[in-house]
Length: 255
Ligand code: FPP
Figure 1 (cartoon, rainbow, N blue to C red):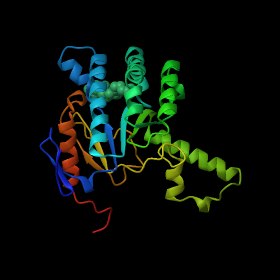
Figure 2: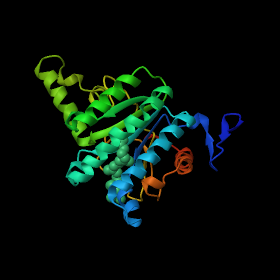
Figure 3: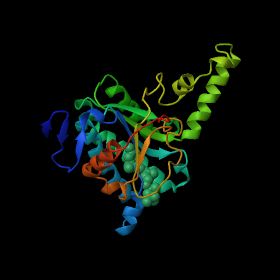
């Protein structure tokens, strides 16, 4: 790295990133694994495997760039509609990832959190996740949030249900409902993973949708859609997306 005031030039990229305007939270929809595999005449799972390798590099690079939160959309509430072979293959990859990388995550001071109700995942995946959450819980570096069995509507529905139960129990009144109260009840809320809203959401593969990802939290997020499949999303592509974000003026509804 070559430092010049607060601006540095990342050695493997060509993008001038402003350290002072680094997003605190980047969230990524890792799309295009299937198409990447199809173009190479490979099974879809080979695409997910390549996607996992890309994900590892982006975790490392987030840490290097000083990003505090990285969230990846690994499995949505809708992904259960895929074939049993693909679904179980993705969870096997998750177990393999924990097996091969947990030590490194602990050493690199990464704290892992899950967004979503992961209790309905296969038993070995639940076990791997709980081990990961436990062993990284006191880490203070990058927080790596993995969205698993996650859906934005499901998350909001659960929050509304929980608030309704609190009202029924007489713990709060309807007039106590505020945006902060709702935010607190989400998977990202301060009593759960405690994640700020993402300044930047990246979706690879050229699809221009949020697909039920962080619906509440994305109210003012900047969206970037790199035209590469997820397995081809390199640290350089990542820096390009951040440079795009940094070039934008954020007004939050003001002038
Ligand atoms: C979307 O591409 C990708 C997924 C639904 C799975 C993402 C999983 C990984 C990157 C690897 C596993 C990592 C963990 C932590 C479980 P797609 O299959 O929808 O691609 P397509 O639109 O081209 O078919």
